[in-house]
Image (cartoon, rainbow, N blue to C red):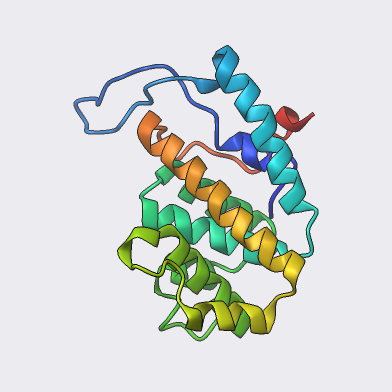
Length: 185
């Protein structure tokens, strides 16, 4: 589930620019410790709060964020959204099958439409049309205009977070649900 600090969690980096001998990646920079990063984080959090308060189901929000993070190879966000979804009651079976959602029987038709949208929206350069008419029709069938808008904004937001964390080499594995909740205040 997205907490009030959800977006801020995406912006936590530590300063270092090394890959250790054990091939574990260390982060390059702490964006939160400079003027631009701190200002950006505040606005990022505000955008996340709008999505959190929307009628788009929180479980769908986490599945979408997880799938984009998997596609983009963002270990930090994959770790975070897996743990947040589990803490909010998501099952390990569903979390384990997000990457193979097309072959899985554990997702609703609405969730499948959202997962198709996030895949096409994340891989937007892979086709001349961006999101296909078929996927758009499926999304339209299951979500109202406010939910669709939240879904589109979530795809944009998580892709931005993924790119920042991949560029900054934010290491994965240490996230604990709720650990950045205070950033939202």
